[in-house]
Length: 72
Image (tube, rainbow, N blue to C red; front, top):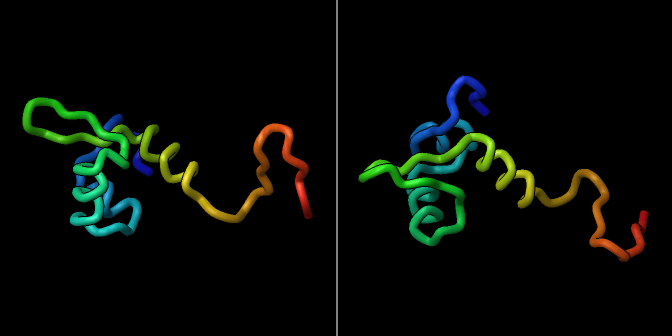
């Protein structure tokens, strides 16, 4: 993601993630993607978007809930 900016607009999030702008807007309306409203503008904090994407990643590193055994 873009490290120069603190926040991105919907088009920039779309570009960076490969998701469509309409998907970004739908997720925003549903409150599923982190965003802030400044007047009529909707901005997406870069750090929060990165965390949001990582928290929804399936596969990759082995993770387990606390107390659950890790199966390999």
